Length: 283
Ligand code: AMP
Image (cartoon, rainbow, N blue to C red):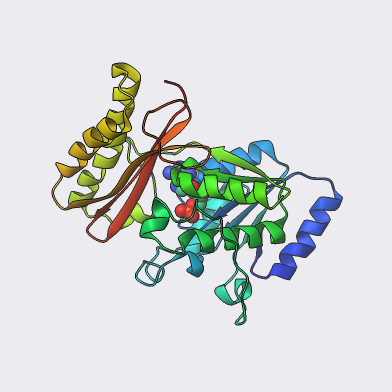
């Protein structure tokens, strides 16, 4: 596996690969790799001829009181995993390589970025879109793989690509879960044993809402959200940040569930924020 820390090195390598007419698959990550990331990498490996993974903990998507400094990092372990998966190139730049001192240009998807996660993490999606577009410009992939785990991010990136005519296909990948249903996340290591047990309440609430829709034919968002909230509010020391039902195409809230909606939620347990969602494609 080739490891590049510099943009110029990547460009040189990509130029060669493009000349060979190889299809490039790209998986952007912040590292501390887990089976969620690995599922994206495996999909890219199946669908493309050359697979690039980036590991970059992007400072511009973290707020001033967020966990940028203590975000888990273990590059040696990640490299082993990527070699094992037979990834072709790892792009692992440092902050100065991605953001020069006089960096001034930002990408912002209006409306989509200030709701749900964006309300609790102001500026987050501006940082995400900016770094993702930079990475696309550096790697020039044919396909890029994103997890549904971060559904709002996926929808916003798709919108950016569509609005700005970025020549890349965004491939969405199912959320990988632990046995009890908790969505796998690098941040799960922050959870104490007791918090880990509580953490499942978000998934339980989403499943309950899905069950009410599919089996009880209850479609009123208000009622569904109340039922979901009850499950989360039963847990002590768990703060519900939001639980919303929106259209998957534009993230707009809806009063009555129809097909192609997504239920998104976020909770905070101690210092740890967890997000999850469930897609309702059919009623
Ligand atoms: P991160 O390193 O957390 O920024 O995630 C990098 C990519 O992996 C994003 O597209 C995430 O949506 C995706 N991802 C993270 N966790 C999971 C998961 N449990 N299942 C599927 N994809 C995931």
